Length: 143
Image (cartoon, rainbow, N blue to C red):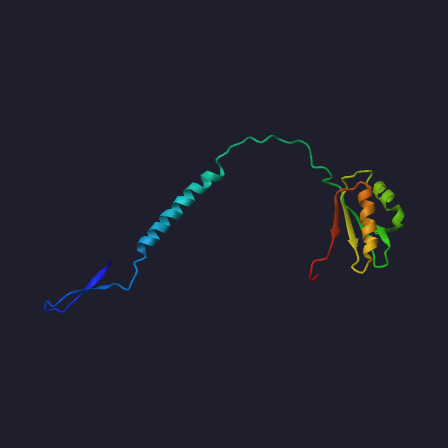
């Protein structure tokens, strides 16, 4: 234990008193050494496996296709890309618009006042038509 001598100049009795300060210099030295070790070894860990990836010549499917938007207003009327259509013709109209492409992206916009059953019917018709890439659009809070 570290301590300091206490005593008078005349050579009296000497006692040891513990120091109240902690020397942090060795701690800082150890931490810097650990930091340097981690900085040197981290890049070696991430790039340890080298692979040669093959080249792909095919372009992504539907990269250029524009999504089809199905809108349901507050009165339950259905619109396909801003043109009103009857609900019972939704699947056939979607298949015509997508040229029978089941990978066509479809966005559904529904008014928040629309009946839940109407939205459910629209979604069920789209899925029964074979379309798999269907998204529901919503407005972000504050906009």
